[in-house]
Amino acid sequence: MEKKNLELAVQLRHELHAHPELSNHEVWTKQHLIEFLKANTNLEIVDRGLWFYAIYRSKVGRRNIAFRAGFDALPIEETIDLPYGSQVPGVSHKCGHDGHSATLCGFALEINRKGCDNNVFFLFQHAEETGDGAAECSVFIKENNIDEIFGWHNMSGIKKNTVHVIDGTAQCASKGMSIYMEGVPSHTSEPEKGINPAFAMAKVIDTIPGFIDPAINKGIVLCTVVQVDIGAKAFGVNASKGALRMTIRALYEEEMDRLQKNIEDVAKVEAEKYGLKVSFEYQDEFPETLNHKESSDKIRQVCKEKGITMAELTEAFRASEDFGYYTKLTKGSYCYIGNGEDYPNLHSYEYNFQDDLIETGVELFKGLAEL
Image (cartoon, rainbow, N blue to C red):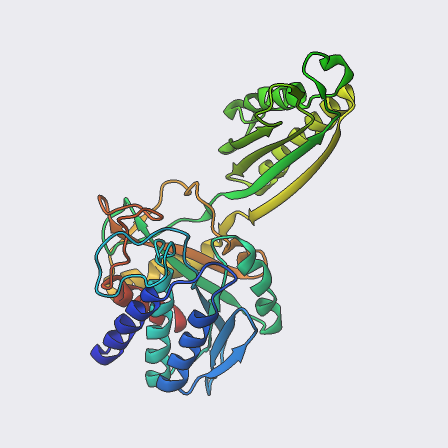
């Protein structure tokens, strides 16, 4: 990577870090990235509102290859002392999306300068943290006849600057599931005159271990109860409303869907038994991130040819990533570059993206763009 381009990418990363924005509110971030590309490249820019992409049109134009980066931040306070620390109270880039976007821009600088035999699309995506960003941006795949798409994430707990890849599922599917039940209030001295959702919700919770039993599932299946909210602190009033909130997660999306149906069925049966109204709500929905072997093999090939240290992931990450929306529509692969075995975890106060990962990411993308 050219020294000047690396310096520009690092400076951009620091600017993005200082001005973090939450999912679906990345107004400054998106505009700053567009202005950077307009000032430093001749790429075509396509503004889609909350997100955008840039295009390098090759004179040869053999294939349409896309590369994606997210640019949203997290609702976490910046507590470490950085010269480019967050200027927004309660918001910071504790996942590394500032580095991902800076890497994609650095890659764009290199392609704009040196060219490529393929058409290269640089996709800058909003709202990765909530899962709805890629769901909206996935139209990009068909609209541009994308043949293949790649992305990467920095990851703690694995060797520094080592590219890790896996075939098949790379990250689990997940979604937030809420169950609402409503009965009839009464005086606590006369519970028989009311309808309390507590017993029905307790039954739902009690059935969960049977649904996630490894003996009946192909891959890992999890259900984590995050909140049980029934009634109020009023000792004279029999509770009549309740909400049960869970995160359901699975290695295979089909098994997550089965878990969801099983929990819904139990909730409906119990609600009917007690005479409760029941409804369901879902949010933060992520598909499984499924890597195509052909695309993962290209990552392996580039690492070998460029002398980039590489390792195989032995199992998928439990955390979810919305890149899977793209690989449902075209070939692609999502890989990981290590922060170091003992580096602070993503989404922690101590985390900060390491600038030297940018060049590794850019060199990897440059190699993939030529295949």
